[in-house]
Length: 402
Image (cartoon, rainbow, N blue to C red; front, side, top):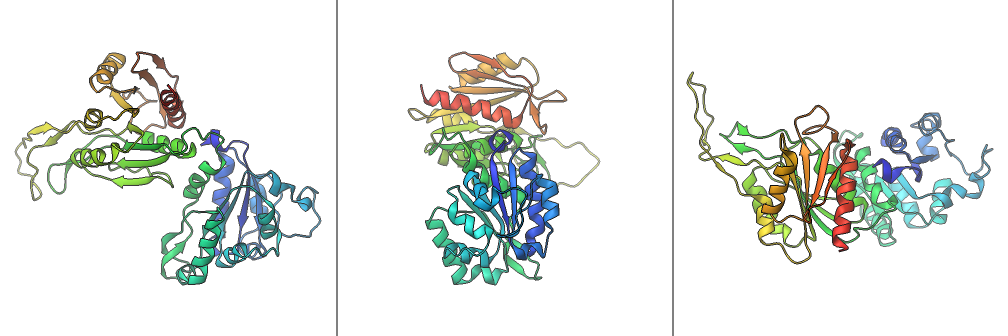
């Protein structure tokens, strides 16, 4: 994400919703990933959060009024709006959405919204009745027809002590939704990518299961990178604690059998299939229908092989489709990965060391080797999983261009 956001000019508009305090977290995350953020607060927002907070986070003067003495005369001439790569309005009230839909320009934010030609991303936040009102819905549809992007809202407990739609979506989701709008690389625009992620749980009984240590971090990194490059992304994910990015179609599954069934139904329409999930090789032959009680004796489990998920995809591979697999190994890394590559007729395999302190399940970094179907072997240095995802998709682009 840092590569995508680095040095991108973002105007962060904050309007008068009680959720305005969450915009501080959003600003901090943008800055953390290298963006250059200009905060703009409406007068109503200033009643809820102070501009000094945003100035401290962003390192830039916060704009609060159209006509005020400014240290930087650029602002008076809306140079900020003209150089922006993205406008993010978070939180956006019903009042702001109405004004934007009707082209009203009565403050700095709404005025420059008409002047900018940058993409606009709006994150609504308001009472559920206000959000569901036909006027608000029509105003949002008007803006969408003009090319304005929306993210959220979530449903949940609101500041008015009711429960419903209208809760500001989490800041990280807003940041993720912004990535395709500021990315300079769009080399996967329109490409349909299916990714498997996470691990699988194979039931012993309704309470216990056999599983593995997969965190889903690699699948998440691949989905983020693919979305930023313009791909249409579907993620089939087993149980994991890692959230998938905004913009991906997420299909949760539990066991290897369900993952295989889902993959077979979806992969045939994909241009690229990436099998990043750590699928259990075995399942319990006869899971119990009720909880097995401790008896003081040993418990024997008969295990049988699970379906080979990526093998099923390979068996029906269509012309021009790219298949990428993963090999998580503890020893004989290259040899084992090459065997898997040939056996499953893959175009690319990512061989991972999973038994070191800096690479493997749950880690933020990975020491990987990329092996192509033509036999090319590229050993990568220790990289973040975001960086590994970028290298993998670079290879996918190259393979599609053959």
